[in-house]
Length: 149
Image 1 (cartoon, one colour):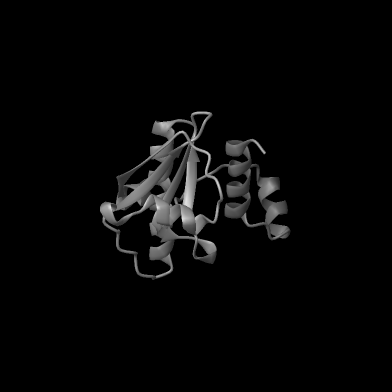
Image 2 (cartoon, rainbow, N blue to C red; image 1 turned 90 degrees about the vertical axis):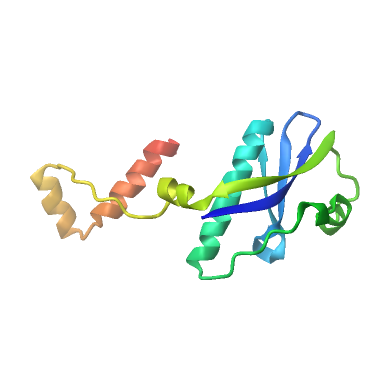
């Protein structure tokens, strides 16, 4: 399944980009937002953001919002809705971002993957006595390694 949404990009003075997707709302009914260290990063972050929000909407069995026509997206109206006196940016533009949600789910989805592991028998015995959830423990350990917490 592919989705396409208009996205607003604001280039900051330091070369980074603020990114807004007006059609997708987060908490408090405020549009979702992300950022990027450069334009390429910002576009990739926009794709990830859109895919993640759409997957969340689908998992909650809610209706996926329709995309507004890009010509109907107004910078002035959007900026007024943010209630910011003086947005400090170098340039701004809007474009459509297309996302293959199916490919995103296939790569990053929450589907469980079965793995076979080998551990010493004494650890297995003691862990079972303590009623340790092996899957949860492995997941936590892997996340710690991945993100080096």
